[in-house]
Length: 306
Image (spheres, rainbow, N blue to C red):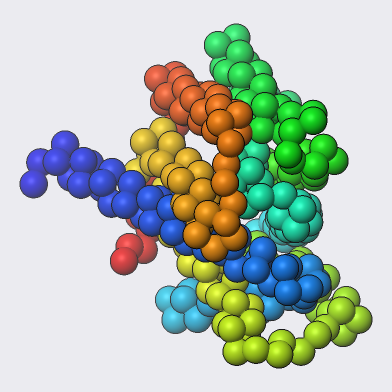
């Protein structure tokens, strides 16, 4: 196999992993969370169950290869800050999900990559040209269309989703900073620690025993799909460049629309799709510009593969 053919084969694998997580895994995860919220389970209980199963998943996956030393971080302080940002993003996202359609929240949350571009200037010292700044502005205009004043989406929920996206953007920035400091498996395990500790402390005050087997399955499913989703994203970027693989993450919009309609009877209007189109177009343009300017790093080849 030639080097070109090998790179093409790797890119296809990366795209396959990303499509799987975007179209199926993450939309189903969010649907399970919304399902539990509709049955009056607290956010604390949902996050605790997700965190426990997620951590067990990661430990079972990585400990056989790295042993307990895989938990040792070279930057524990930065890992805790990153894990805290993930916790904040999850809390705000789940609260928004309890008030807004699944598809609308998913669409608006894709402003996070746009915020990464803006934050990369002061935090990473990267240069962003006028064309990418225009693309960022177009993307935020798309979010404003989705959460338009007077529309069907509650106005204050717009701030929650933007807050979740901002926390997740900072989370992504620190993921880049940690890439050269810690093994990706260490980072994957540390990701959920703050959420686990915080919800364990508060859990006894919010616990309600599930009354149906389906509810138990939904709780376990949030952790399984959460851990599986993060692992598949790692695998996707391991095989393919961000500019090639990243745009396929927008498949979540299709998955969320299908799951939202089939499970919750949600119908997305034309204005919401228009706003999503603006966000997707700006995100893909930014990814292509970063690749053209050489800021898109090649995938690491010296990592464990399936």
